Structure formats: C-alpha cells, structure tokens
Image (tube, rainbow, N blue to C red; front, side, top):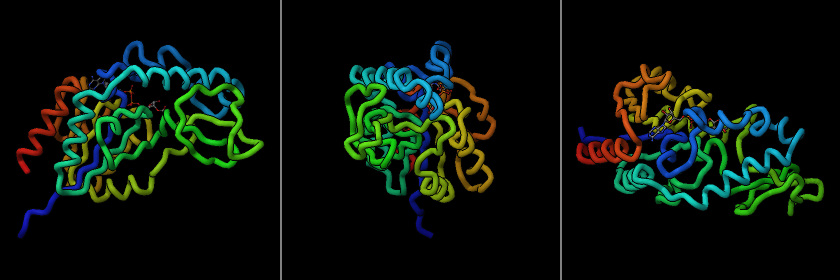
Length: 236
Ligand code: OAD
C-alpha cells in the first residue's frame, strides 16, 4: 500500500507570539493580570464602557506595529509549504504574525486585531487605526465599529470547518496555549477520543491538558517548534 500523506492540524496560542514581544494572557504579569476580562473582553463591557474596551484593543493594535514574527511562526510557514498532506493552522491569537511569516491556510478562531466590524450589519473590514467609543460604521447609519474579536460569551469563528479538520487529523499539535479556554481547550480531547491521531504539545511548561498528549516538546517555542518541524520533515 502506498504511504498516504498525513493531515496535520495545529492549534497555536499566545505562547507562540511571546518571544516576539506580545504578552500572553495567563502567565505571570500577563494581560489578564493587569486587565479585568469583565471590563474589556465581553459584549456587556462594550455596551457599558465602550471607550475602555476600545482603548484596550487600540493598545493591542498599536503593539503589533512594533513586533515581528519569530522562528516558530516561520517554521510553521515552512512546514505548510513543504507538507504533502492537508495542513490547517488554527490560531487563538488575534495578532497577524502567522500571516506575516507566510502562513496561508490559517483560521483565526478568536478574530483579528486588524479587522473591525459594524455592530449593525456585521460587515467586516481591514483596519489599522484606533477606534473611539462611537466610530461610525461606513455600512449602516445606526452601526458603530467594534473590534473583530471574539469576546467571552460569543461564539468562536469557523467551528464547523475546525471540527471537520479535527475529525480527519492524523497529527494534532498544540503550541503555546494553556488550554484553559474552550472550545479550543477541548480539541485535544476530541482527537484523543476519535483515536488514530498523534497528539503533540509544545509549551514552555506543563499545561493542565498535558496528560492528553502522547509527545511533548518542553521549552521555548522559537527553539522547540523548528526542532519538531525539522524532525517531521526529515521523517517524511
Ligand atoms: P494563555 O496566556 O492562557 O497561555 C499561554 C501559554 O503559552 C502557557 O501555557 C505558557 O506556558 C505558554 N508559553 C508562554 N511563553 C512561551 C514560549 N516562549 N514558548 C512556548 N510556550 C510559551 O494563552 P492562550 O492559551 O492563547 O481569548 O489563551 C487562550 C485565549 O484566552 C486567548 O485567545 C484569549 C484569552 O482570553 C480571547 O481573548 C477570546
């Protein structure tokens, strides 16, 4: 029987962008240590205090201007280019470092900082500038522009295609994510239950979900991701 190319699904989290200079959420001194989720990352917060919410995301958008993709982002782009099987990169990150590194088949399940959308028509546009509490929407007179970010209590994006890809995955890799936010935290359990899927975790540390993975690369993403990619491409 001919050897069939394998389907890879990769999930990334804030840890892959940490060495580029972006804060993670739950590590010591992370974003959620200095900002309250309830005040900046929920639809209710946006209704109650839109100025505060916009300020938080304006800062995140501005930070993006001063950072660059790192070797971990670049290694995943190289893997995608050289891989014969299906390749899907799912990111919980709202930065654009994967695309700047050259990744193509990329799903931003928690939205994107460099996009905004109309609160009325839900149309989405690319956006680089700051938003204020009531930046008018170009799409509808009653709409204002909000960050194209999935807030707590909202549904993540692309879930139908993501679960289809997970069902077909032969290799699932989680990189730089604590696994504490669902549904992304449930992806490893999903592929574990379906069986026939290698489950690899690449993280600086153990996570709460480490026991569900059968292989671990423990260390910095900029070192461990290229190491894993090289090993995989050599075994091809
Ligand atoms: P977390 O901040 O929860 O977790 C970051 C993970 O990255 C931790 O497990 C760290 O050990 C690991 N890490 C940190 N530095 C690393 C490095 N240099 N190399 C490798 N690993 C490293 O971030 P996420 O899991 O991405 O959602 O958080 C998930 C979601 O929670 C985010 O998308 C965001 C947040 O609330 C929304 O805002 C909707």
